[in-house]
Amino acid sequence: MSDYSIWMLEYAKVPDAAMSSLVYGKHNGGTVELPYCYTLLKGQGHTILLDCGLNNASHGEQFVKRFNVQNWFPPRDVLAEVGCTPEEVTHVILTHAHFDHMGGLELFPNATFYIQEEELASWVSIMTMDRRFRWLLTAVDTGDMIYAVQLAREGRMRGLRGDIDDVFPGVDVRLAKDTHTAASQYIVIRNDGKRESEDVFVYTGDLVYRHDNLHGGNPADPFYLPVGLASGSQTNLLMTTDSILKAVGDDMSRVLAPHEPSMASLYPSRVTKNGHQLVEVALGAGQQSYVH
Image 1 (spheres, rainbow, N blue to C red):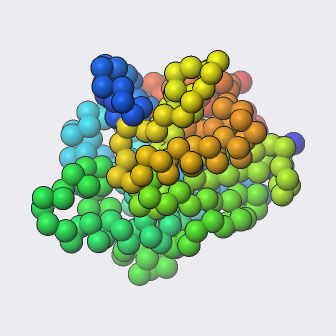
Image 2: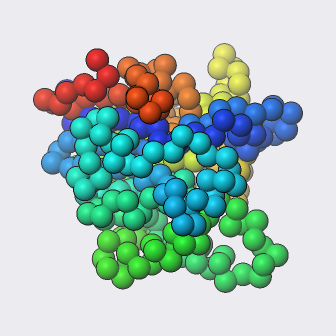
């Protein structure tokens, strides 16, 4: 029996994302629909969110317009589909600080947030650079950075240093330095609680946008293709991709990529009243299904 229920929850989408921004080198790949998701873990006495989406207000609204984000709904509506409220979320693990992964900080009033210490510091440093370097801030809301520092002052933003086992029971973080961002991290969920687990999932953040990044569009003879948007090393991204796949025993279905639309066909799912995909990856002991 699973220790955690795992739900991938779509909260918005981009109808016309450039394929080249998702898979490196796909310059003539046209556009594709890009779901925006976060993932909820419930079990072991915890309610944990992996990433926290964006806030379609203030500075966040500018990013919604810039990237043509549509059908955004706040966490209160999204979490209600699995019987949860934003106030019940007590912990949020942030994979990185881009606007669609860290922009919802203000929407979870009781949560403590966890991010790689170097990730937050790197963006503050970039904010001090000459205007000519502004491409580096393409997907970063500087307002989020300011709020994150305020949360740190309040003790609600915790900096992590490198790989850490059992941040919560059976939940590990792994640093992916100098990849998609300066210090992205991915989350390993050992859903049977065992150190040598036979029930592992990896939540990737943006280290993997699409399963195409895992197989290069050729599952019969796969090769790694890095994501299209990265401020770090593509070689490091490929090494991280390999580590992610090894963590799940090369089972691509266990790579939980929040921008991958096929997750809804790999696991039980349904379309919510707001037109979002709700994907039920696992059910913890005694917890009800919100799909069947």
